Structure formats: structure tokens, C-alpha cells
Image (cartoon, rainbow, N blue to C red; front, top):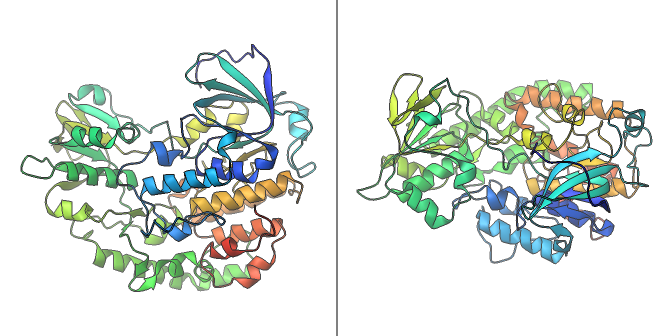
Length: 528
């Protein structure tokens, strides 16, 4: 938490709904709640969130275009790529915000630095106001107070809101930095150390000049690391180019830019309702649980089918990059990275080199691996992820901070949106799925229906029981469950969300439909 005097000096500005963040989730929330005239706080000067400020020039969507769009706003005809670039998606998101006139709600360059309950979080009042008593938000007086820092001013503006929607996301402005042995950290290194967060803020020319002719080490093997290594290789073409070394601790499955596996559409293997029938889901009947166990060999066969294709299609065996866990575990944790077309050609040319290491540390001229080998470097790039939970926790005082996480390390969110123990607050964009756009839109529709009195929530105990079942499914599906991904049962969750809103026909009409396409074609009965 930043050091501020959190005492209001000029009174409060009151609003019915406050939304924190103007990325995909924040824009979706503003659109669905626009009748309440929400105030949206965005720390930067534009919309886009992580897509605007934490991406590389080579980054593309990880999901096919038609599965990454809002139900009432198709992609423009000028965008034809199966996996559009990040700049094309930013234009699409901006067009969506303008089309539905939500930009007027956004306060740019406004950073929320503190959020607190207007009363005492330990009081009987706070406990009695939790969702379970009446099963719906309480709209009669402000419940939350938000301290906002605007345009780098030292002065804080205070807002009071009856409802708050947190859309700051799992990624962003707090990098995860490895812990090094004493005397073997970055201070030991004579070169430059950067996190991908800092690199992604460079313009294209500055990034190119930074990498050109440099010996670069990239630490990590997820999407950011792969994209960065590709950009490094492109900047080091020619006789004066230097190789980029990728240091890998944990291997993950990577996929080529295609939606077909051995001629079979990928969504039929994992994204369709019939495919997700093979996987365990929360609150399933005993009969279905038995069927899941009976179909376990089929599920494993599908994973092996995909793995065989990836080993055949990509030279991952040649470079020792075949993971020791099944593909379905990476799918269940939303960790498959789309590999750029020129990634392996650069490796074939010697411009990308792969090294495996469980641990590493700095020495004066580069880094040293746990096998005692050394890699010389001018620049060490840390593609080591972000501390999304720290970013969220930094905004809240105790005991709210302690409530945010389940003992398993994930956030318990009913319907992927509501924390059962925190009243009049929603969290959108913290649970991953196949399509961030579809998930954000549907969850925000559900949230709008809840706020408008369209249905009531179950008791706190029932919501906690349901979220515990979801967490149990995640922990059984993948060792990487802390990424909190619902990709193997998100259609089931969307069924439940739709049924809450009275859209019960959706489940029966679309047994073998593609994931998400059914709900995007549903007649909602209104323009929301």
C-alpha cells in the first residue's frame, strides 16, 4: 500500500457504482451498468488494460477471433486474421466503448490507492450485511469509500459508492521478481536487468535498438518469454546479431497458430459442450461422476492426440521442449502459448538458444545456472509474471485483505464474480477461461441482473460450498490450479449463470454447440 494520509480533507463525491479499471472487464461492466451512470477509474490515459500496457509488438490473440468478441459487436470486416494482433484488438475494444458510449463514464489518469468499508469491517453490521441475509446488494447508502490519486497529484479525491466492481485483473503493474541467494542478485551483474513489464512500455524502435547486437537472456517460457525471444531474434538478424538464450524452469505445451489438430477443429476436442462432458464439473450428480471416471481413458486419449500433433508439427522434441505433464493440464490452467511462426526458424538459425534450469543467479557477466554453467549476457529479461494478488490486496485494509484468498491460494468467487464474504462488491476478470471477452460480458450481464433485482443470491454458506467445489475441480484437473482457470467446465458455469437470469432454454437447445457460440446467439430480449 502506498504511503498516503487516508483522511478525507474535502468531503466525498458520491456515486451509485464505481468500477476500478478500464480493460476488457471494466469496459464490459460499464456497458452493462450504464443505466446507473457508473464512475470508472483508469490509472492510464486510455482503455485496454493489460492489452495496452503489458504486451509486445508481436503479441496476438491466443483465441480465434470469432471466439473473442462481444455478442453484440462483431469484428470489423477489415480484420480477417484468425488471431488478430494486439493493436487490432485495442482498436476493436475502443470501437466497442465508443459504440456504446461508455467513454463518458471513465476518469483517466485516476489511480485508486485505497478502498475501505464505510463502517467497521469487524462489526456486526458488516457481518449482517453479507450477501446471504437478503441475497441481493443493499442500495440505500454508500458502503465503500475509495481514495483516488489523479494526474500524479499528491492530493487525494474521495468517492463514496454503494457498489464497487473491481476490474484490475490478474496481471499488470506489480512484477514477480525471483529471490536470489545473498550476493548473487541483480546488483552483482554489470549489465541491464529488466522485467517484461518495463520492456512492453517501450515503443517499437526503442525496443529494437535495446535488443540489437546484444546478448540477451530471457528467463521464462510462457507467452511473454516466447514473444520476447522472437523479437530479440528479429532484432539480431545478420552477421552482427547475437543469440538470445531462453532459460526455462517449467516446460509448457505451445501450439501453432491454427485451429485444427490433425484436421479436427480444436474446439471440438476441448471447447464444445460434448468435449467438456468428458471433464469433471462442480455440483455434478453421482451418475455423471461415474461417467467421468468411465470416460477418463477417452479424455487421456484426446490429450495424447493433441500432444502427438504438437510433437509432429513443432520441433519441440528436437530442442528438448516436450513437457512431462499432459496437454490437458495446461489447457485446464489456461497456459498454452501460441507460438509465433518465426520462433523455431530463429532457433534453427541459432538466434534462439534453449537452456533448462531449476535455479539460477547472477554473476558479473551474466547468469549462472544450477549446473554451474554460465551464460554471458548484456541484458537479462525477466519474463517471470506478475503479482496480481498483491496488486489487489494493496488496496484493502485488514481484515478484508485476509478474506480475499481461499486457503488453497485462489480467490473464491461465486459465478466467477461475487466473493461470498464481501458485500456489494464484484470481481470481474480474476478467473480465466477460454475467452476473456465472453466471460467478462456474460458475468457482467449476470451482475447487472443481480443489481437490478432480477434474482437473489443463495446464502453465504451455499455460495462458499459451490466455490469450494469449483476449487476442488481445479485442483484435481491440473497441478497449476492457482492460475484459477475454468476452461474445462466454463460451459457448465455459463449454464448456471444463464439459468440465474432465467435463460433456461439455453442448456437444452445447444448440447453439441461450440463453446460460447450458443450464448452469443441467444435472444436476450433486450440490447444488453
